[in-house]
Length: 264
Image: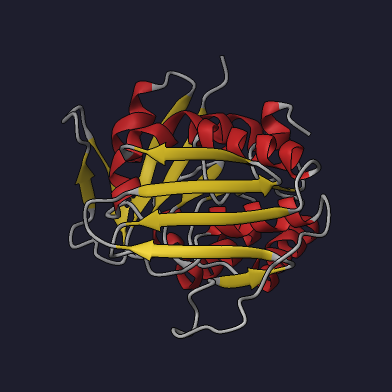
């Protein structure tokens, strides 16, 4: 059985720490190194204390110490863009879950994939439930003229709306044109939320929450609500592991887990 050698980029982050625990438990992958700007030692003890791996502040430094096929990146837009150029130049495939990437950044990643013939899986959300929320919302969108997207996260999330909410907005709006009623008066600016092609998008940030996404469709006499709640970050791991195993088989960029799960 072929084993895929993996590097975690953003190892000190919340999802990064979950990856350090999850990857060694899968016999089809081998965790060979980790990167984080906060790295203060040259090695990192694994959470299960089964061993240590090379640890560096940059991917470039780490690649001088170990070889890998895949980089899993959960950092931010700046960290991801810096990592991607180095990874592509070294022929590494990428699984990216970093937040804050703009449409132009995603286009640049696609260009890197084509020029260097490496696979990239970028997903705003790696939970199967969130992928199904998107899939079901696209189906429901065809039957309603009004829709709102509500998303809520912890207070430390750096972007709004979330990448998951924006993908929902893009994909739902691609199905049809929605009606967006505007009140005659608005005593508090922004009360109706951000507007994307007739969709209202609302973001909430406060302690006690992790990641919650809701799509509400309305028509005469009825409301349909689709909702996904992330309880802990462990739920991201099956999707990330699936992406790691699939990305080595492709030489293009895939956005979202839908294609990998056979939903498109």
